[in-house]
Image (cartoon, rainbow over the protein chains, first blue to last red):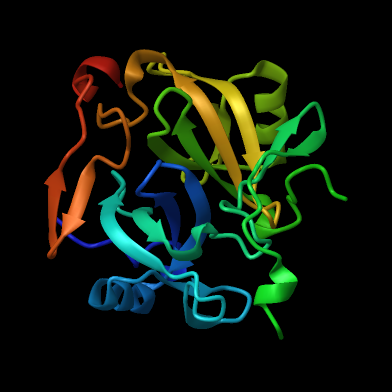
Length: 126
Length: 126
């Protein structure tokens, strides 16, 4: 029985669902390669692979809003990872919202339903 | 402002996080193309694109365990979809568990923590 995520799938890049350990809110989706997986296990802080920047990153390395791992679950096919985390700063989204899923879709319209925690202009100076 | 998921990304295949509308448990991850998205909106039942079988499928078309849509949320980049659903039969996973994420990873070991609802041999006759 394979005990680790199967990084032979999806060109070595597996989707990671990130959920709040406090209230089970889904915060974001990111991707891990094997390096990000091991770095996460070693440090207890969520690390991902940025597909656009093509580099390893620690969530919160710029904003300070790191994610501390509470629990890791793997799916039946071992190709999706679910992290339960404590989100420092209360916001996972770079738009300043608690969750990246801050808009509800209904009848072709998007309605903001999420809570904004910070102003991105104040946090990301670059 | 684009109001729909951006199917110009990821070769037209977007990840979909499926969460229970009852208790916010994450049930599974699947993928939608534009066809699956529209079929889901039209019917109110979750439809996905099977990457392995390369075809549209309605969740539960074989087992009867369909997913009725309660809420749809889109992420900041419009390339991930979050569905809140009512899961008929109480099990989303083809292994018979409530959630596909029924195993916890710790110290290189997987521990079953999920609730088994049905025996797959009884449900999938093929």
